[in-house]
Image (cartoon, rainbow, N blue to C red; front, side, top):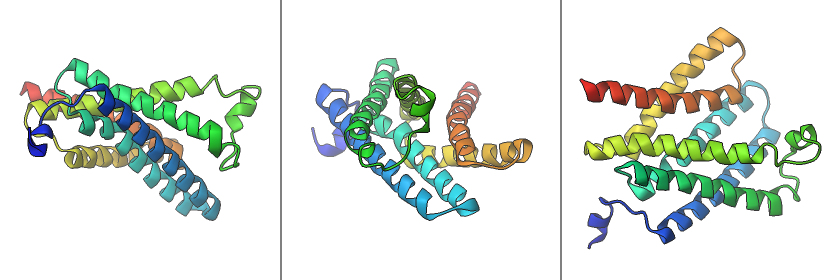
Length: 202
């Protein structure tokens, strides 16, 4: 099988999944370091804008990296892509615990809230990472089956919906924040799936 042919079929072997999970975890760690450094250098509106951009970029990577790797077409392969998201979060946790925290890359207020322990919220991060990868893979699989799978197109759609939701929530709830952008990105993935389902029924 040629490399071109292999790119058009599902890739769900154990080696592919584990390597993809490790890569995703390393990319997450790099993204967190960049986010932390820029947060210290910037402030005000510019800080919020840059943080929001980094959140969207990170969300795109986390949502679609597993899907692009697996190229899911059914429920099982969507689950494998979601597993890549989970593995990425686990790998990041190891890097975070072994290097980022000891080096003081950023402060962990959540640890103080939890009495010095991060294990009350870290599993929630793992679940959230798996859900993002699951939603991205679900949308990708619908496009893959229809012969229109393109990470670039899907990512562009997600970004546009995120920006629209961000503008609406910012207008309704008050000052826009990077945390609001993170919420809007997750909602955008869901809205995107709903639109795809409606279009598919027509």
